[in-house]
Image (spheres, one colour):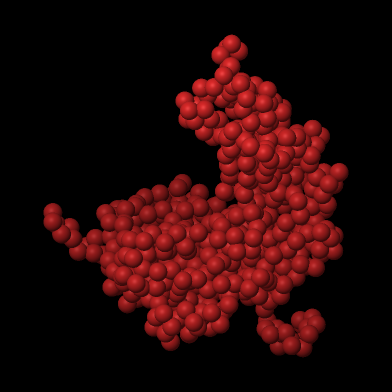
Length: 429
Length: 138
C-alpha cells in the first residue's frame, strides 16, 4: 500500500509508515522562536534539556482556561467548575496515554519530576526504608534523584550505593549485579541523562532489580520529551517526569506508579482534596490519585500538560527520536570538524544518546562560552546542570551543554559551531 | 552587543596580575562559587598595617579571574582598614563593565575571598598586631 509511494531509501527501515518530523515546519508552532531577541539574531534555543519551549496550542489552552472556564476542580456545582474538572481529568487521561499507562488513576499530578520523586521518598521511602537498608542510585543522577534519597537514608540510617559510569558515560551494569547482592529495597536511576544524554537500558535494569527483590524508580524528566516511553512495557514501579521539559507549562509534572504501591502508600501532602472524610482527630483518605493531590492543584498547567502530551503523540515519539538521533549524529560529527579543539563528553554512539551534547573549549570557562554565544542569540546551558557528582567523576568543574527539541534543525548546530569559532577568536586572541 | 569582554578584561584574564603564591602569607583564604566552579585563593602579606603583598591563584571564568587581577592591583599597598572598607560598588566601578545579575557572583568572588582573608587578619589582630611601630601611620 504505502510502500510504493514512500521513498524507501533503505530496505531495512524498521517502520515504513513512520512519519518524518519536519522541524522547519514545526518552528511555526513555537511563537518564541520568532520573538525578537536583544542581540537582533533569531533565537537559537539549544537549552531544551533545561526547559522546553511551548507550542501555541499549549499557550492557547492555558489562555482559554483562564479566560473561559477558570474555576476550582472537584468542587463547583456550576458550569465552569464542571468544565474545569472535566478538562483536568481529561488531561490526566491524555498524560496517561502518552506514557503508556492504561489507568489514569495511577497518574498523580505534581509540580515537576523533583516533587514526584520527593513524593516517593517521603511517602513510600519513610514506610519502607529502615536501618541498614540500601538504595542503589547511579553516578549520573540529577540532584533531584539524589538529594531526596540522601535525606531519607540520613533519617533512617540507611545506605546509598552507586552504579559507576564508564568514561564515556555508560552505566557499569556489571557493578549493578554486585550491588544487587546487598538486597537493596530500591534502584532509582535516570532514563536519559540530562548532562551526557545517555539513554539507559531501563528494561534490563528493571529485570535485574526485580529479580533481586528491589523496586525501581525511574526519573523520566529527560526521556518523555525525546524517546517513546511505555511505563507498563518498561516494567518500572515508579516513573517521575516534568511537564515543562515536554513542551508543557512550568509547574506541571507527574508521578506514575503501580497501583498496589500507591494504595499502600500514606499521603505525602495533607489538606483539602486528598481526603474523603475529616473529623477533628482523624481523617480518611480520598481515592487514587487524589489522595496525593492535596490543595487546589495547578489546573491550567495540568490541562496544558495534557495538550502537550497530545501534541507530542501527534508528532509520533518514534519520529521525534529519529529526528533527535540525527541531530546528535550531526553534532558529534560537525562540531569537532568545525571547532577542532572542542571536547565532547558522553556516549559517542548516537544510538545510545538523547539530544544532549555537553562540551568544553579548553581553557575557556563555559560561562564565558555561553555569554558570547548569547550575543548571537544562541542559548546554551553552562555550569554543572544539577549533576555535581557526575562532573566530579569526570573531573570537570563545569560544562556547556547544547540540547535539542522537535524544532531544532541542523542549521542551529551550524550556528552553534560558528558561535564557538567566534568564542575562540575572542578568548584566544 | 554586550561590553563584557573588553580588551583590558580579556587581558587581565589571560595574564592576571599578582597571580601566584606568597612565601609566608599573613592570611589566606580560598573562596569558590560551587555553582560554576570558579575558585580563588587570596593570600595577603601584611606589614605595618599595610597590604604589602597580595597574591592570588585560581581558575574560573574570565570575569572572575579578571576581577581578582584588577582587585589585587587596587588593594595592594592599602591599609588593612581601607581594604576592609572596599565595597562591591567600588569593584564594579573598577571593572568598568556592565555585569548582568547572572554574572555578579563571578565578579564578586575576588572581593568575597579578600574579605574572608581580611576577617582572618581581624580576628588574629589582638595577638599579632602588638609589635613595634604601626602606630604613627594612623
